[in-house]
Image (tube, rainbow, N blue to C red; front, side):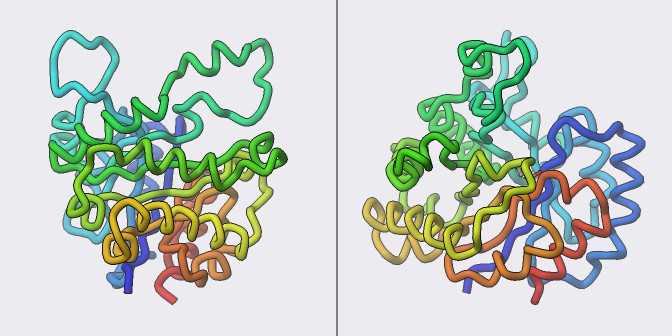
Length: 268
Ligand code: 13P
């Protein structure tokens, strides 16, 4: 049995004050939900305060991204040791928004400019290795765009992202320290959730891809989250699927009651 993991990705939201108010409200709502790993991903600016506020509770924190160097002259970037020092246990890597795959034409932004956000598959791989070397748990995000889905390229896109993300990472680390989040880009922030059976099928493709590289034992140990318009009213169905071991939640993680309801759905 894989332990479910529910993570709230706040993206570029919440001041320190708002983040602390959230922590205070959430803590009693999820008390005793020890059968689920609970994670909050605040913006960097609130990571330390939120980590402190959840100290002694079952809620852990994650950074929303990481640079692969450990220290040095890298203006604006944040390393794994600094993230650990701020109190986080996990880090998101390869989110579609940091890969520059917003899935919508932003006003005045060309594809080139969006891609300049720049997380590539190779970048995801070096960041995952750096995070693991420092003792952070990477949550590696993968998923197809609407165009890739319409072209029938969902499975090859996702499998290719998985293979490239894991290059050079040992079976032991994959089975004990790596988490995947399948987030179809077209379902993120759109209210358009992927049907539970289809989300499960693609998470199964992720697992089969891991199996083909590392064997069945490793593949069956890896936790795979679904992300994309997960809400209190659709969480239970998604979380009951064989290959879905948790959720990565954006919009519905901004309100303590909604996020707690999703944690409750995972607790069963
Ligand atoms: P939404 O839940 O707002 O669709 O966002 C999903 C997501 O991108 C989480 O990382």
